[in-house]
Image 1: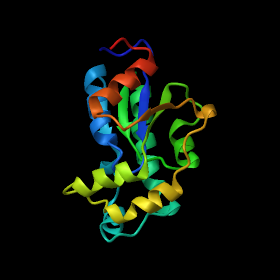
Image 2: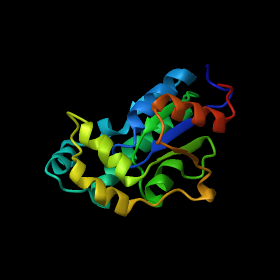
Image 3: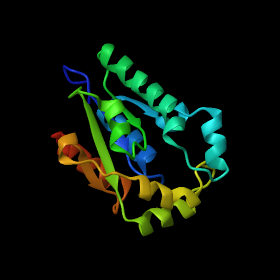
Length: 173
């Protein structure tokens, strides 16, 4: 699918292991939009902390969120649509990304802790250890209706999750 007349940026959010990167890449491919994984915006210090099993604080996340917001700003200014992955667990983080721009939409991938933990146990080669999952759920502030989220359960495979997102966006499957 080609870009709409006005650009849109979807921020795919959720806890680690919810399938954000997989779903967002498939979604971007289906829509023909640009894709970026927010993990690539982390500095080496943040990655080292997470590899050591240390959760990130708000101060650690500030430059990361600023880099993601800059990616969003660039896309909107250039008239390009995109899909970007960002855990965006707290309302304040999402606020830094969405601001007052209706062209930026949150896609919340929700899942039960047991399902996500099982998925994380099978994931290899990622810097985010499964031991931090509990802290992610503790920090999670699910988006409220005022954030206009597209909320989809990850209980089904990525293809069905993408179809549900496209349906909520009003695109024919």
